[in-house]
Length: 100
Image (cartoon, rainbow, N blue to C red; front, side):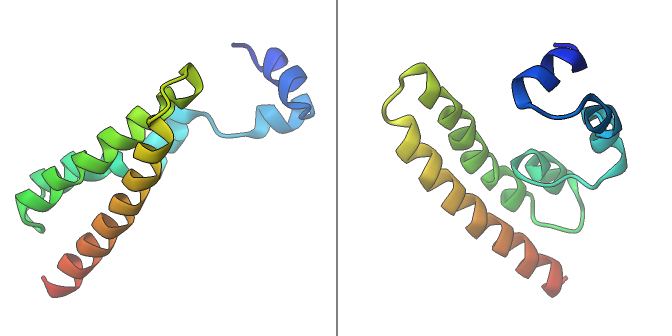
């Protein structure tokens, strides 16, 4: 989708949209965050491997949550539970980081 198409849909001035960083900029310039960082934690020598692999559970649930728009009725509940699990996972990663 071109920038001009997005500005019409989102009602954002085209100059603001062009100044917005692209996804590739975010992926290379910011630290990994969210469920996608779980495999990175699993491979890190700083954290127990099980902690990283456990993060894939809420990641899969959040991914299933995207199917809510497609009519999958249980996706909303799965998504909500997955975000709670993801928050608990983030706390566990923080505690493990503080204890290292």
